[in-house]
Amino acid sequence: MTKNETEFSKYATSFYKIIEGEKSGKAEFVKMLLKMGLLDNGKKIIDELFPTETTSKGKTIIKREASDRLRKFLHGTNDISEIADEVYAALDHDNYGAYIEALEDYEDLKLIKFAQALELDADIKDINKVRYDIAANYYSIIEKASTKNYSEPGKTNDCKDVVFSYTLEEPEKKALVKLCELTDKALCDLKKLTDKISDKRHELKNLTDSAEDQNWKSYLVDDIDSLKESFDEDYPKLEKLCTKLIRLLEPKTDMDEEFLKLISYANNIGNDEYKITCPDEFKYNAFNLMISNFKECIKRTLRVIDKL
Picture (cartoon, rainbow, N blue to C red):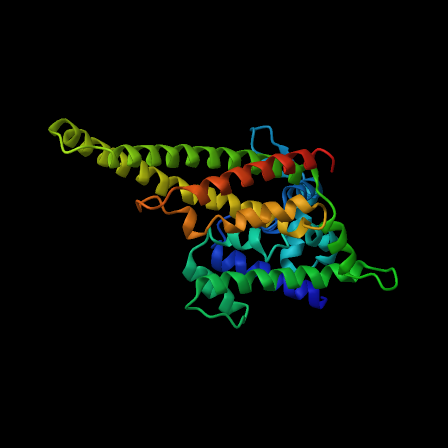
């Protein structure tokens, strides 16, 4: 048994016992594990490598030969380097983002126990660091296994990184288009809210001391508070979309300057100046300018995508 076989087998076996609780079938588990942290094109490759079939009873199962192969990866009798090139190339290399996100679905205590089983030097008081260290360990295992298959003199993982940095696969294109569309809509919705808040605050300032205006003032205050609550609920959704945009585009910034600009706008969306909807002196100028520039950048990015 090679070192790479031992490392992957140890990782997979510990994951299966500690985190999964040995609830699923071994082949199904390994296939799931191999798809963790992969971009959509990578998941498709795993599905092609380990296809499924439908039984006479209508149940979907992994084909027998593929199932046997997956179980051997778990036991260490098959060398993971057989597929490590495909897995490593398709992993989300943006600071282990997608893999860490997948780990968030599991219980913190189980992740800590898993990290300890792997003898990782993880700070158990910081679950985010635990997830990061687990992801880094997995990437290291796959990366070391993938280098075994390079037979050309001087060929390194740098080659794969270059290809990854200058390639936008079809699933990535679709994801980018969808994220741009959703972000554009979120920006429009927030601008409508801030415009309403601004208009109503302006109306509130111009009220007189008359009984009629004072009655109307109570209504306006309630309405503004309601709009502000909606803003506070919707803004995190925009921030989440921006985080995903950054995660997708950061490895691709050399492909087009618009990607770098879009990342800049997405990064700045967390600025407090864009979240202030309360003070009387706030005129929404900074927010409106950001919305306009962000939307224009999205339009240019969508035009760029069609040419890639």
